[in-house]
Amino acid sequence: MKRNFQKIVAGIAAAVMVSGTVMTVQAQPVMIGDVMFDAEYYAEQNPDVVAVFGNDAEILFQHYIAFGQAEGRLPYEAVKETEDTVSEEGRIRGAINAMKASYPEGTKWNNDNYYAWKGGIYSGGYGCAGFAFMLSDAAFGTAKARKYNDPDAVRTGDIVRMEGDSHSVIILEVQPDCVIVAEGNFNNSVHWGRKISRSELRKADCFLTRY
Image (cartoon, rainbow, N blue to C red):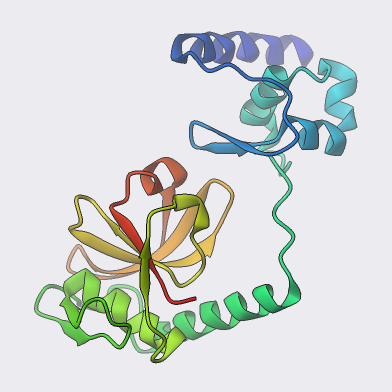
């Protein structure tokens, strides 16, 4: 296994050198391409890896890319949320997912569909915006929205404006390397469960939250 891994490491190392990425041992996660990674945490949680390959941050990252993610190893320790935060986001996720019963996968939803939003900022929207606003109201009621621009601050229920401010999605779940969303006017219909990578998220135009 080590011999095969070393071959893979050589290829990844070359890519890292070309891109100019320099890694050092860190005590908190950093974004490397589309991956959030904490070498110190990875080493602490995977002594079997360290025993074979050492604790060099770059090698640990390469191990995660080549083997770790497929083996279910975590790239960093998720933020410990308070019980209230977990409960609130769980409720919001549940309220949004409950809308699947009325708007299942593939339901026709395009720019002919309009929804008047209760969140303020915008009075309402057609197509993708209208669908996101409808799910947002299902979760937040009449709470007022605000804009922000930090992609690392996204939470379940936030709306993402993307693709040159031409498309809206609503976040169902935040994961280390991506967010999972629901959206309308996706090929003229409702779509649940698309993954949007962190790199795509960083290109978004803005975010709307009602927390």
